[in-house]
Image (cartoon, rainbow, N blue to C red; front, top):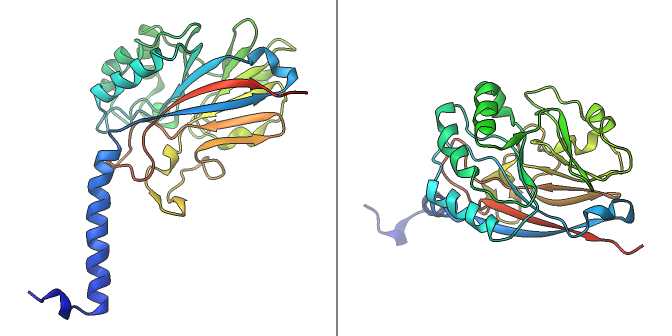
Length: 275
């Protein structure tokens, strides 16, 4: 074996890259097990002031059959319950392709205790393994699935379009069915359809799907962006009076690692904007 001082420049670069890759992979295994609570202030205009003070929790992209952690998920549910939120919104992709994991997953998600309720939408993976499994599992646990549907919650409404990638969303029809004059929250698996409509009554769209990139590079960000998450990858975005928040997701897909992109539980509070 060569002594390190005799390595060529090329050998040093290759060796360093291999060492960095191994270290990053090891760290990625650790990072995926440490969720972060992101606290987000979402501005609302006077028009949508009925939402001011409301607090919602957002989670999604569990992919529970791809190395899901029961203990981490239970900790996340307990953390949300300690916040006293009004709503819990689940953005889809409950498992990747094995529906037998839906029962243990939804048995834990049923422990959420929001003041108003827990609502869910479907993701592209939920369509690919057959929507009936997810629909049945969520219903059995008392979690309301919104599938091109909405709910009038008194001061405001919530809408749940179908997956834009794998389903048949009807966002304009969904909006048209809601009572005139009430602000709306849209829960939609994919974030990029935020550009498909512009109704000012929609104060917020919450999405997942991107995993925040799952593996990110320093000073660059997400390396891989899936279809319909090219424009919006993670965090809060604003377009006029409308807001979009993209959650980084809770699980992993294909590889059991996250790098510079920890699992996320979002606690979002609406704040009025002075007129």
